[in-house]
Length: 369
Image (cartoon, rainbow, N blue to C red; front, side):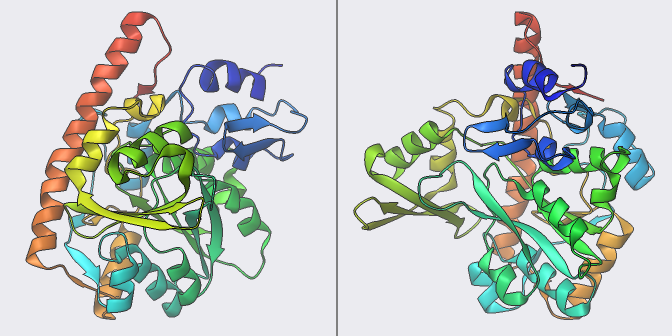
């Protein structure tokens, strides 16, 4: 069957190019594709509509075309400027101390979402959460409508997540007129493709703001997550039940591991130590070939943030004016500057290296234009 899930599995999933962004599940009109802890699987009858094949970012993304559509200009090279096209960058943190403490690094995303909800700019936000015990590599997703619900999702999760699947529930919910989505680069790539496809464009219509997270491409399989946690916390792999992690500064990260016997082990470590351990295991294959650290197709990227669109700029300015966001401390400003200086270049260098290797080996690789 041409343009079916069979083609997607053969050309993308089975070749290591699947990002597990969940876009195929979101785009399937008969809900025949499911997001699972072993990847994307066919759980119903494929009708061969081709939606999943067309919107999938696994084989590459036309960054230039999307940039021209979204920003009115493009970079000279798709792997050129490491931080993408943006209108301005600001060093910001949450003004509210409770939001600040709950955030991954300053509570900026939670703060701007709560402001947008309270100001009536959006009615809901699509967010990622931890999946719960027994699932270290994948997250869950949901729709937040209140300050309390947003804070329940607080702290960025760098996990495979079915957040795009929530677009269907959003579309069906007449009480939601406008919403925001918080997503990783691969998820944003799929979303931008969905905006242009006649079979999926209706699912994107309520999204007013696409808020992107910086991503160093460190997604791991379940087994490799356990290896990393054991190395960093001394909790043996067979004893690991659950994990929570968050930044405590620009250079340090905190792990909270729940063991199967109910005991909790907490360890704080340098970000460099964490990344060094990740480099010793196999990162998800397609993540190793993604050039997009700074979520170049979002309206606003956090990190810094980098404000890319006019409506993104309006939302940030409104949040600052309402004392939802404030200028970051000098320490956080310097830490973020160093991260944004090193990580995008490191990711793009790794991308070029791995794509060249796959090409030399005659194996499929993603194309970026």
